[in-house]
Length: 319
Image 1 (cartoon, rainbow, N blue to C red):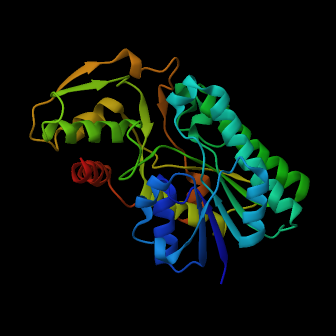
Image 2: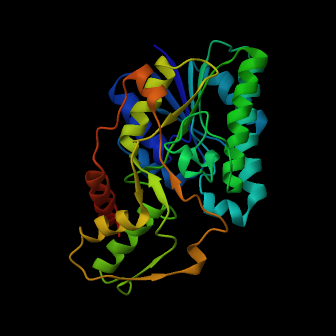
């Protein structure tokens, strides 16, 4: 049985990946977490996984965890993930994301675990501001990062390539486009809308929804589809290669909001909040996933309507 280590196992994608791997009986699962409160995300599976509280920026502790778990497979999902928040503290975003990954790589290298398969999650944000002629975005599209978060993800991406080239480590790089669904933090756009709608429905706040840039277009995939892709990537993709993962369809944020408002019977007004706008924003990110799909056969199964309803119902249940 394979030893599997998931960093950030109690996070948004990590918790769904833990459930999927457990359900598929993929191996003995261990996972790192940082925040005790996040453990509620893995309530359904926490008795079936080994939990390790760990700050991944602590190199000595990371080394000890890798030595203890001797993973055959590592899914590295832990990171600071908000592009908007990275503008407020760029140093923290870059230092955290790069240092955590370096500590992980160095532990694997020093322990000579060179047969360990490692999945690194970069981000579609690395493409940044893409010209219309370059849409949909494939893996050869020029990188034009528009946030400190995107720079941190480029660094993670290229560090993974460097460790593959230098040491022959079995690393796969993926660039997921936006994934959404239940459990996502409320500072991400779809979850933010869902939380506010649920609060308005329950009379907790006035029926005014503050919004940022509604013109941006994003390629949204359900997180439950995305974690299936992660599992397929570690099984079928080629070491050192990079793969885009997304639905292949982009929606304007205004379209997503209209769909979500149609799921509510409460009359809700909108107003633009300048504080929700980024210093720079990517106008359109839509994925060309041909390279990944041709190799793995993966495609999204969950409709955008179901994802939005499930996200809204998640917030309705906890507000």
